[in-house]
Length: 193
Image (cartoon, rainbow, N blue to C red; front, side, top):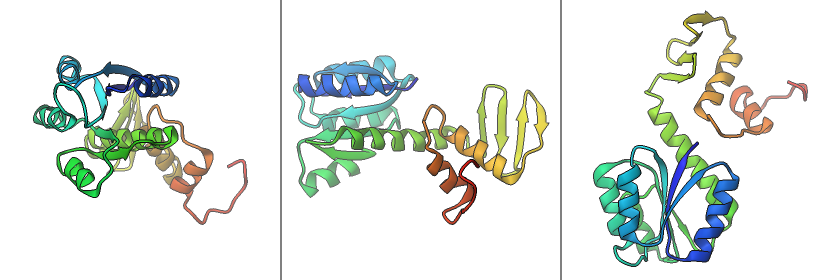
């Protein structure tokens, strides 16, 4: 289960986002000011998968929180703020944020951006050419699959499908998404493939 640290001082917004994230299967840690956000991050650094961070916070502002996080970690950070000028966005992204969402926002967009950030980090931590889960492992460059140390004989499509599923652990993928990514845009075939 992915753990998301949310540093947000607007109580109603924080509660709404927390409920939505919990519904989507994430565990949420909340801080209502920058100082507590830094403390929670440092205490849980190894288990936090992503940070949602407001810029205008009491105590320590969000940009300072981001700077302190970046000194210690490359965890994905999405800035979630009312500041919507191009200058603020550029400053936030150049300051180390992975994404920038302005308030008000649609919760569906936030959830999609969280999934994208988590997919990117999972791909990077998949140690380059190796993916694994439990007893299953894939060597991407060599096109080899093993289960419990035994080689699996897979077609190219089977291997590609397994790779997509491993790269997106704990993420629900639609049938259309799988068809597009494994069979290609121009695939025309049976609906029960």
